[in-house]
Image 1 (cartoon, rainbow, N blue to C red):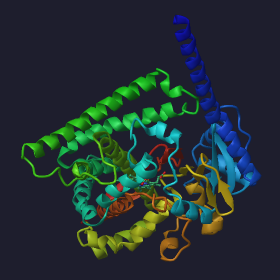
Image 2: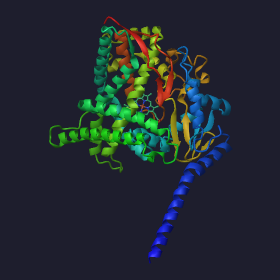
Image 3: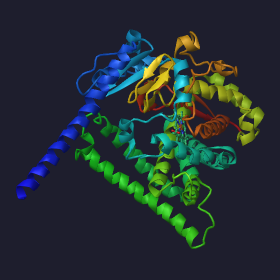
Image 4: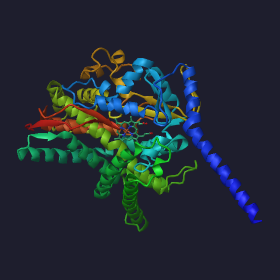
Length: 515
Ligand code: HEM
């Protein structure tokens, strides 16, 4: 009897081992090879991958070499610095080529017609890859940015109204209040004799303050504490994700993995405290609603019984709170920082904006209705996002076989859209593609598909209107209070760490203006 049990257990164990071995082999070898063959048959080729690491080492060495030195002048010709692998491979293989992130095959696609079709038609059958989800699961989890399929669709419908119409207008007060505080701290620095500031630090603090207030209203101080921890968590996850292409690396009991776990627990403990206290207030009758902020909106949704089988649970609400902070504060801070750099080195455009702001709003603080009249500022912001799009690449994995133009794209292939390269393409923008020329945005009719700082199609940035409103408010108020020039200490050295950042910040010399 004992013998039979042992033999059966052994058989189960062996078949389990075979299954694990087959799944691993299929995931890391058979499927990627099948995809490669399929794409090669359609003429899509690329650099030869190495075992396990693919083209990662080659890519890293090209990037390290290209960014090893600062740029000698403030030139916006930055594609060969930030995407040297794209430049090398697109020159050799054309506008569509295959490369390997470890064992994951990726097709880089720079054809605007196909990109337009892909982003508008296939938003529900494409999404974030397993590697992307793993890399960010500890700091944003399965919130909107990382959700796929039906989950994404339902989350998007719950969240989108929070960034539209009257709700959006309701956030203007936070934006003005926080900007006033930032301007006061710049004024204080000036009065203490500090004529030069690193504006990026001020912008990062400002956008973090605005999103904390927008999300957490009165629980804002605790929100700031959470976001501080999230920033540390994000950088630890970025360090750990470098090893994700190696099978099983996420289970290593490394120092990073231990620190990540404890930071995540602390963030979620603080979030649970805020959520619980809101629920308690409603339950004991101290408050009739969960609040007008983003968190209140999500808690109201959680109470609703939805007929479609999808409901928000506590974990998803926490993931959504983390997602808004992650997706919404650094991107906007970078947009503002690069715009200040461009305006500090192009004083004529600074003056043009200043005189329009003066004409439209006498006190230098635009109302919601006045924002649409700030057309020069709008053009400058667009030009800034064209030259320095915070998100340089748009990655999407395809979950079903699809037909895209003349291409059959197999399930499991990731498509990478090189936004930065498209924004700088001379073919699409003309000979002055690398120059700062906001006038190119003066005409309302320009070819769609070549400008996509907020992505495009149904899965574009849900916070786009929020970000544009915020950026216009802040820049209009800053330009009305100060004039600024680029400091001699500024070293032009854009680098990509998820988003495009100025390596040493942006140092500007400030001069307060008479109100
Ligand atoms: C200048 C500022 C911003 C830029 C350039 C930007 C850019 C983008 C881009 C390119 C995407 C698509 C990413 C992808 O699918 O891989 C995206 C998605 C998203 N953004 Fe933004 N964003 C900005 C500001 C904001 C703000 C202020 C918020 C919220 C407060 C926000 C929330 C989100 C969310 C939640 C998504 C995921 C949408 C979805 O998958 O349905 N973003 N953003």
